[in-house]
Length: 115
Image 1 (tube, rainbow, N blue to C red):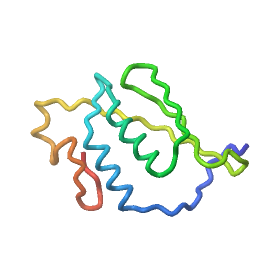
Image 2 (image 1 turned 90 degrees about the vertical axis):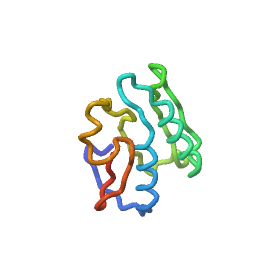
Image 3 (image 1 turned 30 degrees about the horizontal axis):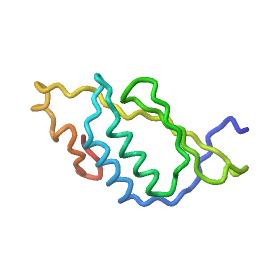
Image 4 (image 1 turned 90 degrees about the horizontal axis):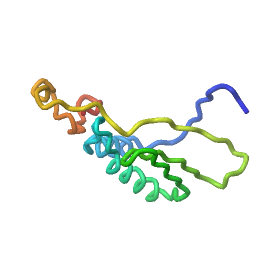
């Protein structure tokens, strides 16, 4: 097994990625309290819509699931791991006025997604 990261060129639909990121940003998942169930549901729905159905869900705390996802035939073709989180820092109501965009807006501005 290789102990290095090797970039692999994969065709990506940029518009699809931006739209999905915007949708995920628009789902509040502040921590505390850490309830990510709605974000997790959206991610699971998306995975299933692209044909990934071998998904294990491990929920160590209510509303804070982790996924183990298998795609492909499980052969010798290689493996990759994505480590991420679904929660966000809390949005304090007295600080929202200082934001340039709504915290859960997912607004596309100048090639960047804000939120």
